[in-house]
Image (tube, rainbow, N blue to C red; front, side):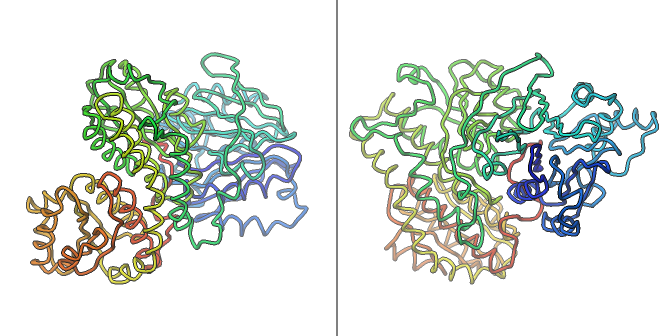
Length: 611
């Protein structure tokens, strides 16, 4: 989950490294550091805290100093795993001749550490990364590529690494297994990073490493081999978004910008993928003919966090419209519980980054069991996209804020298209299909109507700032919305927010209701609304303040709640999107008023590439 940047070329490395770290800070911000080669040996600077602390240290080196003039370096922003956030635990790690940065977890670090201590090595940190760095040092005999290769063959676990030595000027070794590494290819230069956001300012030409790849880089020369199969060839691809897409664009926070980008993001997701005349979805990336779709017995959706919540919407829509058995699995559980999967199942793996470790493991398990496997990801060239070989790209654009917003709504839009595609191949009429297409095409407009209510939503948020706990309730399609709303609020405001199916309220959670426990109730027009209104009355009877998410003009339900946010009228499967956007804005403004670090909430990171 940490962020890695490296540079080798003919420019000053430090500005490129620092800029890259700023763009990767959503991957971790416990500490940061960099190392560059110089005539005086490897120069290292580290700082506890966010990248800004490292920038202050680097600024103390005058222009023209060895650190500022170096043409090769590596840098890192950390999300702590082994050892707390301290300067000593910050990367890079190494010896007086080796420096290494690492994203991942070395599982056998204890035994490796004991072996190295037996050889006389002393450790200055509590990290598993220092073990790997000194293991490389122990193998080094004038050939850094060979030393890194030998070290990695002893390692159990996951890694994305960049390594340099002062004994081989201008040379960097990078490798990956389970943690992403992308190489930005420039003119006589290469930028290494954990993802494309750190390289897009310099080049749009990228090479994505596969697992077990190891590359020797010298300026613009890149030589890639595999630890398991020798020389390999990796094609260049073009990053399909501009550097401006990763900027705040005048908004106070990336999260607010990304909330407001959702109409365009959803439009990009559905563009060219629905056919009104035929009343169906055009998802060529799935690689499935109507005849093959008819043969599918079950859809299994795997994901984590926000992607898991989106998957629940996909489950309901697929069963409702396609009559196809569907289920959602937490990706980590899927891997470890030996699921029953066969060749007539299709497993759909959802991950914004395409690198989520648990979801990637689920992909590999499903593939091993002979299922069709497809990916629903946002990042072109990501591991899940490459390993599945089939699926749908979201085209939502880069999502920088740790709390996911536009990825969720684009995932839901895509899952509705999947449900439509399966339904038209099975039992849905062309007229019903056209209606469904119209509802999907209207999603951006529904979101625009909610965004126009931001001022009113911010005013509602003012009345909930002082609370430290909160319930969210919903049923049917609105239950995953309740889960996503609670997740957003807890992520960025640190309010203890929990979601419950509204029917479960009386089965335990109601015992917690009191004046200090407000309830957000999703009571939109549709099946189950009257029962949810009954739940609202039960909450009010226990003195709990109720915020209702209601359909525009539903004065009857509005009369039952203390506060309300209105959502444009639409069928419930479509209402998921505007209702979620309303709760995103609610969470954002609560967190803003509480003075929280919205884009970089404590203890979190964007891409969960470790288990």
